[in-house]
Length: 455
Ligand code: CXA
Ligand code: CA
Ligand code: ZN
Image 1 (cartoon, rainbow, N blue to C red):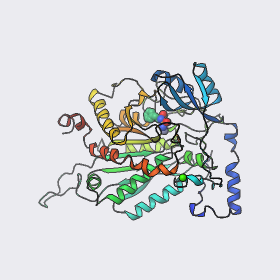
Image 2 (spheres, rainbow, N blue to C red):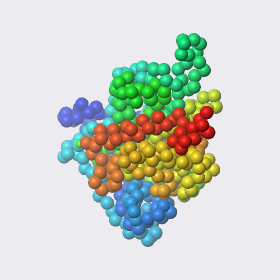
Image 3 (cartoon, rainbow, N blue to C red):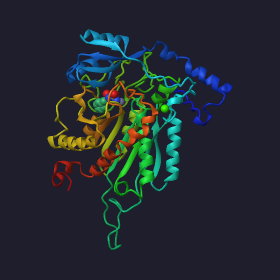
Image 4 (cartoon, protein in one colour):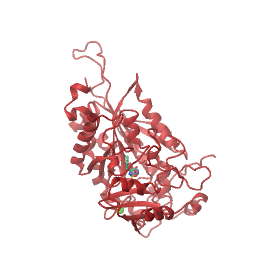
């Protein structure tokens, strides 16, 4: 089947103007439920009271629901009616929570645009325009590569940020003599927006680009890092899901991509269950197309995952992976997570005690700066096929997940915090990001073992 051509969203400059006939037609199209979603099971957010161990939460997730927040003795999930009934049959009490907030301000949103009260969020076109403007402003510092396309044909891009200064990897000797064999600059990867409804993570990418661009050459810490590292930012892994989530002006709480599934009316693969490491191994994902954590038909069956995995593999130079560390941004819960997700064990094949201790040392230090809670991913519940497990297990990249603001589903808006918090909650991670850059040349320094591992 041919993917539909992506619709170009309306510029926010047009917002408030009288709707043209074309806009009205578009709006009507966007509001009418497409064939697939008419038969797709509607989902709701629920509070589930009872589960208090990781094993109990894993059992809740095994119903096909997504576990969105973890508290002592309860969880918040997204589930359809059948999944909620399965959770009830586990013996837990299940209560429907309010749906996504109404941010319409009584005004009509343009199709494929954020609702008026959240206008400071960037839809796909706005994010791309912002990034292009940053690159035009700082052309010697940053550049863009289209690394592939989403299922519906939108560009997935990587922005490269690195300074022109003489840090690691530039190659003339101190006396101006012959070029010295240059140690390559350690590379650090930031990925954003695997899950459609986690829009704050795109804002995090835009923040990093603005911060790096505007502080390079004036802020000593930023300058030193960009002159000795290569930063890769993939600002939007799931543009199709993100656009679908906002298309009608009311948030849809969509999580997956928008790839159709053979023989099913349910669309989408959970990108963070589709990576090629212990895919589907351990009850941390679902084989049902209707599940919020559907793992896809095979590892990398989601084009978005294949595109980013191919990009990561392309950074292997002379047999050595150049990317040393990574953060994958999600919302919400205010957590710093490290692998593995597939096992409850701290150490496992491919994760020594020293590896684990270095993950934990840097993870805890980053969490001390942003106020998040540091823990191994499986302390929440088992996941398999996550990006962090693949980046570490397959590529030996020290990969973290940050679950951003808010802390809980109540006050902060869950997946939909108001746009007033964007500046504060993105800047909140500035120090943690710089810490990861500073540690990236030798993560084992954090446990006093630089000599053993990094000579
Ligand atoms: C997560 C992230 C990385 C490894 C294991 C677990 C949590 C993440 C998820 O389930 O993919 N939570 S979230 N953002 O609510 O979906
Ligand atoms: Ca607002
Ligand atoms: Zn997520």
